[in-house]
Length: 363
Figure 1: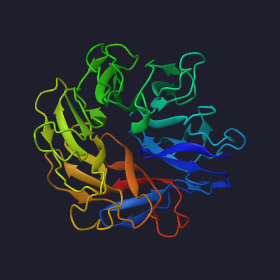
Figure 2 (figure 1 turned 120 degrees about the vertical axis):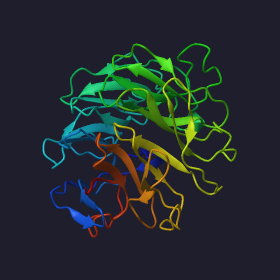
Figure 3 (figure 1 turned 90 degrees about the vertical axis):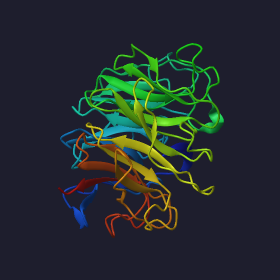
């Protein structure tokens, strides 16, 4: 059976499961300044996506279109899973049919609660229209809660509705992107803008107000909830007239918007998936731009830079396929969770399936 699944924001087709094996995560492959471990080795087509970890790097949550717990995902929907970083205790947390399923999970720093987006009616009768909504769930599978409830959305521009949830470092607030008019009258044009709410869904506020293009793809708050990093294809400060995706920061009240990347290439996407350390000093993102001469094939690669845009470092390098995307970091930025179809630990991903990796940045 085939099903649509997301791969770092792109829809692809998944086919039948062949077999699934987990790689021992203690086997680290050293590269300059970095250590990389492959956490999964999945022989079903396309594989596993959106890994995120807690501050102690004990658990990893992710989504997969594979039947990882035999017999629980035979329809190959995108479902939510949790396991230890070493591969033990693998548990499937969502069970759905049709649509895409569950995507973009983020594990809170305390390792107790997960925020994610889904287009499935996970709480019967609350999402029968199949819009993407924001949910939370405990890592033990309890306390499933739907935080948004909307209808409609821009189907032609990706996941319609509400996507890209990101906890603040204290797991008290969630920022997310939405093309819905959640604060009536503030987003009537249906652009994707950034919103923030409390972890129980209360206190909803709209943070950005854009028109045209896509808008904001996602954003994350710092530890004091005063600033956020995000990526956008809008010309927010007069430096992005070409509509490339760029990385920005701003105060949570909407002031002091700063554009940190500035790229021009009609054949590339740009810079997306921005995350930062709890202190707001270091930013991670993925890009298909050849910033420093190490990405001439325009693959998606993982990058790091200072919060003022200086000190750009390319963290992954691959040829062909999709590439690599950072989808989770620890609050100190020392451990990164990466999804990739590249052979980042040489010889462990020769079939170029979508696999999960942990990257440690040496002191």
